[in-house]
Image (cartoon, rainbow, N blue to C red):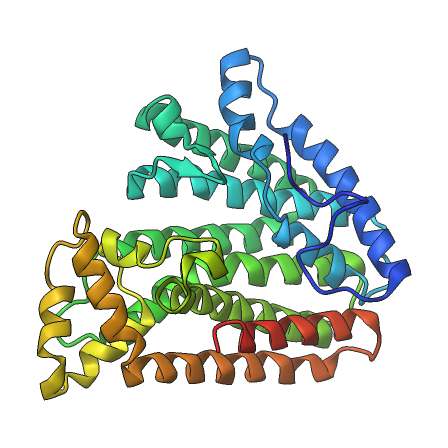
Length: 338
């Protein structure tokens, strides 16, 4: 059963205005119904595979951002806004099918990943099917949307490919990592905000501000998530700490620690260079060393600065509930890993 927001559930963004909250929930319900139709195929098996992650739920953050951004214009209830919201969510879902194959993931949203339930071929082709569906919908929105979606998809795939490649000689590992996050996470959130502004009828100035806000805050949220993977105990975060360490995934705190390379970091670097995938004791020791390392505070400062930068862009928006919600979300991103 889907766990996406409905009338009795909270939204993925901190909306405090009751009227706005109700409008957003009502429109999200329409989007949920539309998404269920968009994953249908002539072949029942394809429908089953394409519905798999949709039915597993999710916060629907990207379509919600489309709806919220659209409130900055005079056409927030346009059918094109709903279509654009479906486009970004289908694109996101498609990328998850491919991600799980690349990561050899067994679970996604508490359910078996598609590659675990079926196989890699089914998962990859199902992702392709969903990308095709999102492209069909984008065509309904016109040439400008097709151009934006093409650029978004290119950035998304670039980020996925770059994640599989180590930085080249002379390339800054931190900049490489930030570029990966901007492509894999930031760009689709930026496009979500941009679509909402465009099809909601917002001004070009507001569109530009929301697009930049989305890319910055989306990447910052991902980095704060990576910090929590190290800093939080499982009973607090609900996740198993050190997942990225076990999978050998570089994160900003780890890259900052490597860059510092202090004499007293020899043991930490030794652990980071080892295979931690099945080493519970090694993961625990690495987590303890990282939690005490100045790199953690450096990473937190980076997130705080990015959240402030995103929040400053919102000065272009009219004062009101939409701006308040986006500012509050930036504050949450700034403080959640502190």
